[in-house]
Length: 384
Ligand code: GLY
Image (cartoon, rainbow, N blue to C red; front, side, top):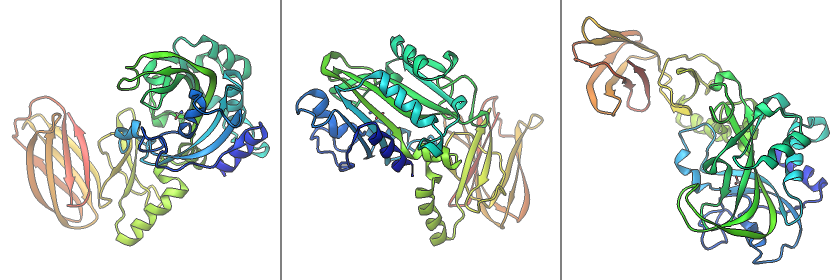
């Protein structure tokens, strides 16, 4: 439905609807299609005359640039689809910004996505005051919700020589339960980037990373290249915490749960350092456990809950409490902040409440992690 609305909206703005190109890139210098703009690179560099001035697509992508983020956040996937609108020397910043605001905020009855305006934040490249003026002119976003960022965040290219340009990104505020106040510059889990508007007007040279490359000059024309993450938008509209639990992906996880008989899925909500683990395989919030707080998804054994560690200054150790749904052998592993193991023990846990004293281990002051594992999954708790 998001795809359908997207294509219909941009078609109504005179864009040619172009089908997704192959995930295997036709560009010999790129293994995968890393963004919606990849099939259109020759039009932007001027190598091939663009057959149309405006195009829109929903492109299958593998984002090799961000691959190290997958599994650490709630918003990166190995595969995703990018909704894009493109201009090849046709419209530029003003229309791109106006279209984005209109599509996001127009009511669903009128064909938009109906997002509440007060949830939206925007970033622009640090030197790009022009975009700030345009945002103020074509939308009613207040100045306090527009932030400036540098090359790493607000200058986009495929990661190799070719078209490049400053960008303006649109973020959705998921609320204080997802992280700190302060806009995208403060917390990108709470403020979820949904749409990147790239003002493709330069050609970049060779270099590494997201900012270490020369700008060689201007492209023959000023182009627009935008990308809205389909799965991220689905997560927002479907009210789920991460891109793995949207309808099209959850069905695969549910099937895996059916086939294995293992209730394995727990989502982690992080707020100010404390976490709640919620058993989502049953659809009910019936498992609560304090566990360590990387943002993202943790697989934990739903049989273990309520892991709690109380440092015991008298013995220089700690008391570890937890509950299990079944009597079984568990391993208990304590590591320091560098990952060095300070304790390893096998525990025969009984059903219900278990209490283990970890004494006289001469722990110096610092941060430790207690991990309980049943051979398949583990629950981890940080303590100081
Ligand atoms: N081409 C813009 C993006 O992929 O973010």
